[in-house]
Length: 316
Image (tube, rainbow, N blue to C red):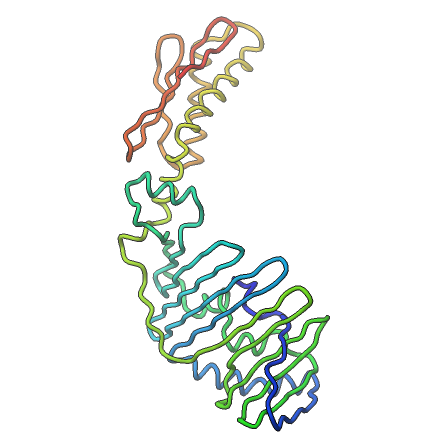
């Protein structure tokens, strides 16, 4: 997210030419001083709500991003389309974060769980504030106008009262565009291999968090992801337990009691890692049965692990 924030010294391309322009050179200190009242005015204008839209074009990546913020309700929304992928999410102060399902496995998990309408995963965070979210993840006007702007440059005032503040640093050109009202209206960044354009709209935003049937809690999704890989997990525990039992025997006859202990230990380690009681081990003649049952599909996967002289036999 920070990659498109236009903070931290991104360079910006000059705006369109205007008639009767007046250009003044500014030192680094003068640039900082000139942008402070713009930040104050922009922050005041954003108090009722604001939106930022970003477009990115470059040789290695192209895409767009959009941010909408409703300070009165403590809600923000962001959306990204980068390199063929798409992500969106909501931040709700005092509640937590909603993010789109991050990958194909997550989408397969909710489908397996019988919840195909789920699009978002929710992570609760009662300490979340809108200010913290905006500081970490959104290009607020105040941040764009204050972060790494202490460089000499020019101020060009246009006949409609708008102005462009331009800096060239390390081959990158940065233009901060200020509208006639004295608020930040946009920014542009341009270098040899990329260009970024950012525009601001100051107005109340209507943001509605996702409906309950489209949301899954992060712990439940994690549980579903473990069960999605249940067949592989049962197989892995069975073969890993068998390998431990053979190693413990050191070329001698594999004892059934030793085999059972080894497999149970591997199964317990897996369950501890997954924070689930998914893998179960049951004694059978000559060894154990390793199995698990998916609570959503009710399918069971099992392997028999038995001692046979100096060998251990694993079969499904």
